[in-house]
Image (cartoon, rainbow, N blue to C red; front, side):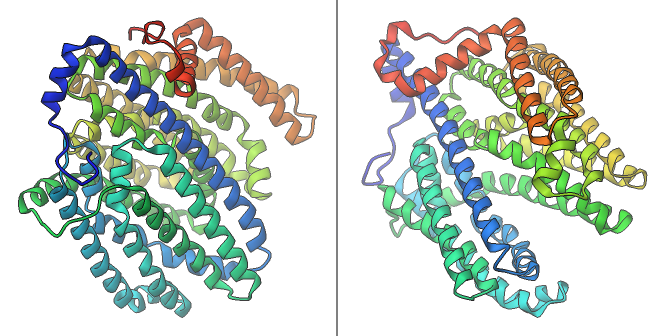
Length: 522
């Protein structure tokens, strides 16, 4: 995108020049792959840094603040995602994947997001007394009113963030997020030591989005004009409404599950389920949380070439399965050792649930990549239909099995993940004009490597059961890592070779002569 916000170069003209120079076209392919790899690495590193900062801060704050303070902020924060989704309306997702942008389109998105954020901020402030009564705590009201500024701060930064993602500037995004997170932790600690109590947590919640938004605006070269395009607004709203639908379906499904489990089995049982979910989600977030944002941009860059898109997708799916199956299989095996160390004693009923949910998480890895694919090629409507059906099936399964207990619910979720995986084979193969069994091929590797690695880990954990838990975890992890690499080398050798090649390109790609770098065939 040009510095002055002019219309981006027409993609057809760009493709004509690329087709005239095969060397340039191949270099462009590599450029997208390199940027995508770097993006995943940078965002993953940022998530680890943020998690470590947060862990240290929690250790300090839990000694300075009361559980009631944490509960008050958590209760007040539950409604924030609803308001943010409404303020953005999916416009950022549209900007990331659209073939070309112009200043009027971006300005239209910005003025809508900022106006909607301001209106929703006022609405949340006004509704806070009513919403606060639902929690039976008057302190929630004032906290919620101040946190309403979070919606406005995040909305103002949505368009600059979309522009940064569109330009694949993931290193800058990761750096800014790390700075914002660190500043928020520092503010929270200073306020807590100064005796501000619950407001230390409020300050932490507001500092991160404000600093992040400021840094985004400093980084982007675009500034909004005063134009507003009704045509662009309609296009963005049409796309964004389907994105919004996906988000709301997920929120409603999660809320429905929480209501069903807590009302039928009690809050204590729901707490066990929540701890198991947190463990699996933490591992997923730290190892694969960068997949969706990076995949959406990368696939959008090459969506006009179906053959390239198909090859890139299959390679990405193989690598994603190889990279994320190990940590999730490790959780499936070692949860009885991990949960007491991470969350403390008394969570025995979470062990089996976490193990099953980790296996389900391995199956759902592909859904993250497919999510980015459908958004990247501009087909959010198809993903919305898929999400609606699968989330409805998940909630229905929970309702049907809730009286049988948490373990039964977890097995039901695993079954839904398996069904969803098969459904995505056909949806994705149709989108990519491929045979369904070509899309399903990497899944066979996932099954084999999960079973063999899991069995080896289970044996290692039994052999080391007399050792201290931390030592047993270490032994189990080392054994599983070795077995995982050996199995991958034997049945999917190209995955390791390709992973090493991509990592090398991501670091030294500009130093390697082009004639020596080739992508393997899918």
